[in-house]
Length: 133
Image 1 (cartoon, rainbow, N blue to C red):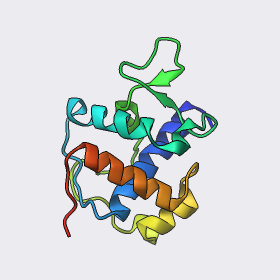
Image 2: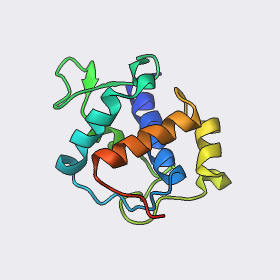
Image 3: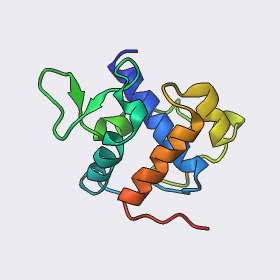
Image 4: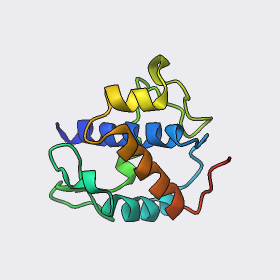
C-alpha cells in the first residue's frame, strides 16, 4: 500500500469502527482537540505496528515523509468514501449498504472488525466522549 492508501484505510477503519460502536457523529472536533487522543489510542493499538498496512503517526509528521500527522487521515476521506460528510452530519450507518461491521470485514485491511471497534472505543475514551446507550 502507498501512503494515500494507508491513510484512506485508517480513516475508513476509524470511521466505520466509530459507527459500529454507536458513535453517531458528526465529527465536530478541531485538529487540536482530537489528535492527542488519536495518538494515545493509536500507540496502544497492537495492529498499528504493521507498517505494511499502516502509517506511523506523530505530532508534526516528518520532513522525510516517513511519518504522518493524524489530521492527514481525515484529508484522505474523499467523495467516493461512504463516510464523506463525516464532519457535516451523522456517520453513515450503512456504508455501501452494509453494516459498519460488515464494511470493516470486507473493505478495510489490517485488523479484524472487533479490533477496529476496540480502537474506536479507545479513541472515544481518550476524548472523554461517552457513547449514548
